[in-house]
Image (cartoon, rainbow, N blue to C red; front, side):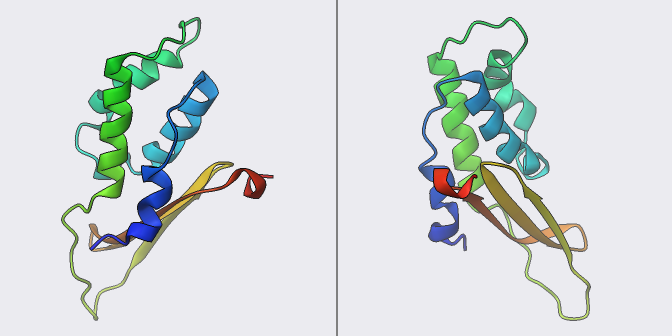
Amino acid sequence: MVDPKKTEAVQKWPRPTSPTEIRNFLGLAGYYRRFVQDFSRIASPLTKLIQKNAKFQWTEECEQSFQKLKTCLTTAPILALPSVPGGFTVFCDASRVGLGCVLMQNGRVIAYALRQLKKHEQN
């Protein structure tokens, strides 16, 4: 079961108001793209807003994309149970706005965690 405390930061992530904020969100979300089916299709409206010379205009399609990605990142995928004799692999990533880790065994997700850093922690 997903720990609500670990996903709260993503659930409360505010709507981006600039291309930089979209890049920050997509940077965190992109780390987990292999666990989100059709990630590129879902994120497409957001990636269009960060293209060079693109006008920043938040649409309903952008909002739906943003909310769908947050849902995908904060709801449990089908998690495998760990087996004692097998080894584990940990994938970690951090940026100026968040961090995340995935615990895997034999190519299957055992657990994961996300955390958005607060403004005072980003410095």
